[in-house]
Amino acid sequence: MKGNEQPSGKKPNHPEEHSYRDALNAYLHTRGRNTDGVNFEKTEAGEFAIFRADPTDASDVVNAGVKAADAAVTIPETISNTPQRELQTVVDLKPFTNVFQASTQKGTYPTVANATTKMATVAELEKNPAMAKPDFKSIDWSVETYRQALPVSQESIDDSAIDLVGLIAQNAQQIKVNTTNSAVATLLKGFTAKTISSIDDLKHINNVDLDPAYSRAIIASQSFYNFLDTVKDGNGRYLLQDSILTPSGKSVLGMPIVVVSDDTLGAAGEAHAFLGDIKRAILFANRADFMVRWTDDQIHGQYLQAGMRFGVSVADEKAGYFLTYTPKA
Image 1 (cartoon, rainbow, N blue to C red):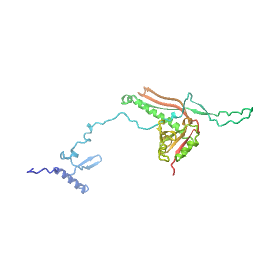
Image 2 (cartoon, rainbow, N blue to C red):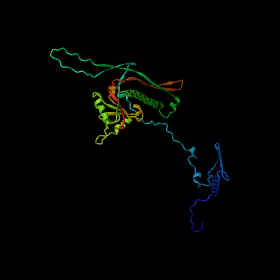
Image 3 (cartoon, helix red, strand yellow):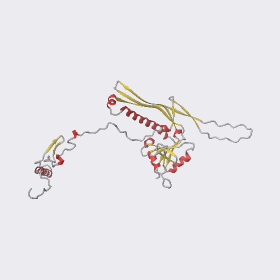
Image 4 (cartoon, one colour):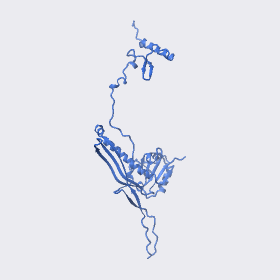
């Protein structure tokens, strides 16, 4: 460096790198006929030209530097041994029904219909007219057995970082709820069908079609709930109201709402609901609910068995309606 000359800041030339680039250019321009000065690498798939020369010094950062792939054997991976359960809201429909403890495999459950007759006037000293007899109705029910078992190796129990048996038991409990929900929902879908396209249609069913004596609740699929959640009155206010007494925290037209998945009452995207008195509508005969765990020395492991014995029946076919929401064309 002479006098007051300052460094130019330019990277030093690398004749070898330039000559290799020239060789590659010649190779490409001649469509592979000129291979002078080009390095090739043989692999199982064939022989290929190497399109970059080895780094000539540390200034060639991309090729000369140490990357994560080069030091992979020294870089640890963090592995979590505690599984995160997938979030899904599952409402147990069983408590909303009329649950009774069955002591036998099948039987009948008596109900009595509301009196529809009335008295007539009677003259003095005339004989008393006969009174109408109570209208008794017997509901037949029978219990079915639902059960599953899962073998778990003792090694997996001993070596697991979590309570593996406890996790499997939780999973079995979810399966139980899915089973009872399916049985109850199947009966709900069999009630008298009504199609609605507006909140006025819903009001008519609530005010006119369903007897005032029945309690009211709405078991709504997510899509049906979405319809209710977007309805406004004439003043632009949403009809859905907050309620601390309902599982969903909402009510509409004074009726509590229970929200279930679309698949429970139909298919994804379908808007269905049951409106009525579900406790009067569905009889749930509960015979047994068990979770059994035992050791099997033949497999050096344990078995976890989950099971239920129950039956469901329609107790009052007039206690509600199965609704389908279809938007107006």
